[in-house]
Image (cartoon, rainbow, N blue to C red; front, side, top):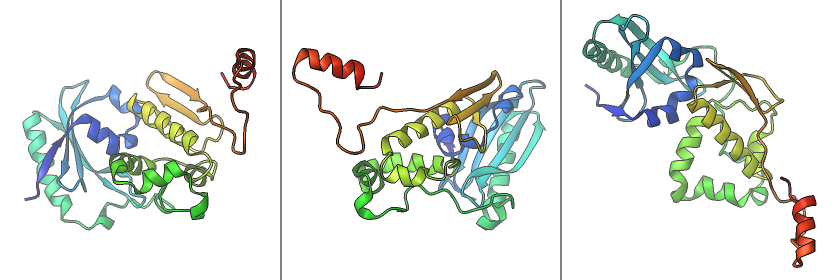
Length: 238
């Protein structure tokens, strides 16, 4: 028997929340979350909002390292019955090789923000710290789980994340994660605006922007009051 641990909803969201379709909340209420000790498999227990029956779902990583459903059942009469069956099926699924979880519709390699695509001397110092320093390992883990679901529609996200636009790209990831946890899903293949999120209550378009210093040089804040006011009103974005 494998070890199965209870997860918090926040841990489940961080690892697998990006696979959830927004409309599912209209039909089920998620009540418990589980994972194998190595988090190779994840399990979800839910209650039907219409009939009150219980169901379970098992998730594993596909070809692009994204957690997706590989097994499920519904119409169980109690949470205990659903939990017992979930654990039994997780034990069965765990014996299979990783390739058994692949679904045949995930084309291209896994998205990877951290393997260097730029020369060492072009790497942003903040990116270098995030990608190498031990103190940032929790942030790396969260970003690594998220990046499997992030679609680089512009084709330059990774290069800019590592070099000239680290701050702006981190902000886009924050927006992506925030709306996911709020129950929205992004529209695929969208370049403008940055995001079009859809949810049970409708859709919203978001253009993610940030204030950054110029890439080359820039204007230093003046020392005199009049000059500083002019600087704030006419140079600093607001």
